[in-house]
Length: 118
Image (cartoon, rainbow, N blue to C red):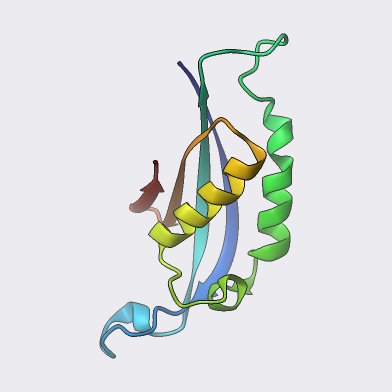
């Protein structure tokens, strides 16, 4: 099995509503997010790629235009803007473009990662 990953970055704000008032995530705040997309497959193309990294530019464009320096509650249209929910959102988006998508990880801080892998 071959596996490749590519990392993307964006900055955005969000607010996790419904948490206790003293919970730090209930306040409006932001993160410098890292999104890591993983693609897996058993076969390589004629050029020796599972998928050419250049083809993932469409994801960079999507992130830059829809997410970077935005308020995630507005972008997603709901208040479930956790790293877990973002990982699922990006997984679903990527799966439409890249059949080989096997997982997406999202980091809000240097020490935390959430992953969606079916």
